[in-house]
Length: 263
Image 1 (cartoon, helix red, strand yellow):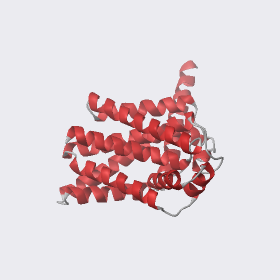
Image 2 (cartoon, rainbow, N blue to C red):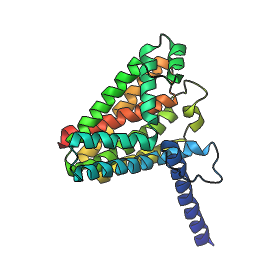
Image 3 (tube, one colour):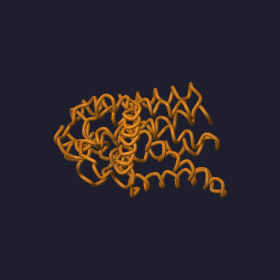
Image 4 (tube, rainbow, N blue to C red):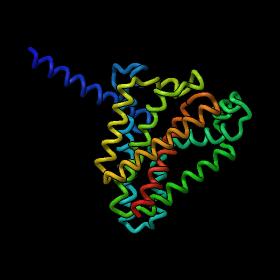
């Protein structure tokens, strides 16, 4: 009887992770992922523990695209640009959109209300365009300079760690507004945040030498802390756009750091 209960508990545990992975993939990508039939709105909060896994799969796809382009003779800069374009297509550029909105809002708003109103505006302004340009150029040059063997593991780690920052911020920062994607995703419990951090750290340690992995974790944490502090001072909390900006900052920081270390 005890063995039967243990087996059922294990099945339920792995089913829970599979459901969370499907929910996370449906939220973070444009892939037509079938969603669990019994998915509840509060399930999105728990599903954030699977964000690093989805990030790792996104990084793997981008890395394989970059390697394939290089394999047919495409120059490294062009291959990196096309791979980053594929990344934006795969995710719907949702994180890039968040970064641009944060740039416009924080740079152009006179007060908290104005900043939040600008961030909700779908039009791209000067500050947002500049931030996107800097982010894209930094990722482009870093990716193009990586040794061939380091491309896939670096992208896997960068995307996994950057998406682990989202549940950490969601659990520890107040919401700046009561609606929007950030609010609808919910606040994850501590167990989900710990799981996301452990998964992301394990991916980094499996894909990279220990010292490089620890440095990647450190720069991701520093980037998340910086955007959290900035968001707190600018709008008193976080939004879905801030989460997107945190992902972009973490991804860029890891790529640049590893490119400097490995190239």
